[in-house]
Every structure is written in structure tokens, then in C-alpha cells.
Image (tube, protein in one colour):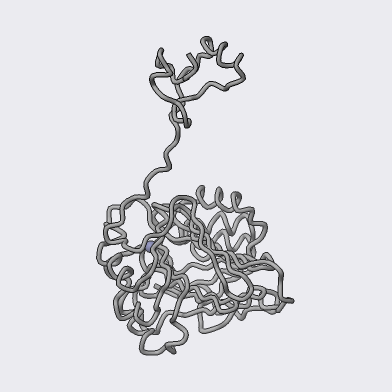
Length: 335
Ligand SMILES: [Zn+2]
């Protein structure tokens, strides 16, 4: 593997401090199936996409859905396809100034496509090093891979997001050798406690460890996961999060998980479906919201008397509906 992109210094454009905003920091753990994609938008409307999942079409759809108007920076935690594929349309559409990467160029078509798109967009490569990026009033601390790591997963770039007292941490698919090296070199105050934490490697066995989580001290864990043949998230990982006392959110069960953070650091977590769970080792799928079964065909032919009395026909599923009131079984109780 070789270093493809040169080290570049972040310009004042992205780092320029702005007045304290009235808005909120939004972090969306996007539902991109099996993979990671995290959209971070500052109160000033500056956005970063940290990983893009494995589908170009899906990310295009989500960036439209969440009304992204610009991206200042895209980041690949590492070069695997389930993290970089969606960065291609993001770069093509928004021409971000910077592409933060670990400098290890995989020999894959999708990596070549991403580098070509960045070249066309005029996006500059930014090699991960220990640095702070000011995204408006939000502080992003880049945690570079420790020296000597040989493969993509253990060369994942970490990102600490801080706003007021709020802290979120994400470290790609870093495995135990990488987190072990970080534990030796990083100050404990950088790692925890963590309000929102992205599960390492989609809840794989070789990702999070008890030692690492003891330092991270996560209150909420989000797992970027979709249908897969790897067994992600594993019972081992779920058990670790449970032991850490964290609430667990999963993009396969909860859809996109959105964190909104107020200026002081107070935050709320919302999901597309269901809520996070605390006993995830045996977590069932959230029960579907019951939807009243509407009759396939509705006949109001027999409802004239009901209507004449100023009443509305009751459909199956509505309070007051009873089968005995629906003598012809068409789902309308008015006969
Ligand atoms: Zn991955």
C-alpha cells in the first residue's frame, strides 16, 4: 500500500471561527444498510460526512432527504467499500474542500472512482494527523491511526465531536490492536466519557473490548448495521454495551438515528423506528406499530340510516367497531 494523497494543511476557510449560533448540532447515523455513514451538521449549517456506506444511490437519496446544501469535508475512516462508496456521489455533488483519509490506498475500483471524483471536484486530500477542525462552533478532533498499523481496519481514523459539554466518538472499524495502541498513547480525557458512541466495526467480535469501553464510557451506542452474513452485531459486542450500561441503537432496527445537541451540550436522540434498548443481548425487534386494518373494499350502501342519525360508520380497527355490528363482514360497522 502506498500513500496516495499528500499531507495538506487545513485552511482558515473551514477553521474560521464564527459567532455562537442559535441553532443545534445535528449528528445523523444514516441508515445505509451494512456500513457506516455519519452526517454531522454544525449550528452554522456546515456539514461533514464521515464515511458514506456502501451504496451511492442510498447516500444520494439521504443527502436529498436531509436537505444537505453543502459539504465542507468528507472523511473516510478507512478505505473499505462499506465506508467509502457513498462518498463518491457526495464529492461529485458538493465538491467539498477536503477529503480526510488515512493515506492507505486500497487497490479497488471504488477507491479509484473516489479519488477520480475528488480530482474532478477539486477536493484536496487531507492526511489524518492529530489536529482539530473547527466546523463552525463544533470542535472535531481527528484521532489518527497509530504508527505501524498494516491494514485498513487498524488504520481507521477516529473522530471526536464536541459541542458544549457534549461528546461523540467514532473510530471506524478499528480493531483491538489499534484501540490498544490508542489506550497507551491517548489521554484518558480524550476518550471518555462519551454521550454518543459509534460501535466499532458494526458490532464485530474484533472491534470493541471491555478495556476500550472502560475508557470510552459510552452512554449511548449506535451500531451501523444492515442485513449481513458476518453475524453483526455479535452477541459479544451487544453484551459489552449492555455491561457498559449504554442504550443501544441499531440502524437496521431503528433506521437513521439522529442526535440533536443544544449549545450547552444537552442532547436528544430520535430514530425513524422504535427506540434504543438497554438489554440488547436479547433485544427483540421493536414491535410494529399496530395499524388498523382497513377493509379491502368499503361499502357504505347500508349506512344510510347511520348517517341519517348523524353518526359516522365505524371501520374495523376503530374504537367502538364490533363484528356483531358488521353483519356482512365488509369491515364497516353501520348496518
Ligand atoms: Zn465496515
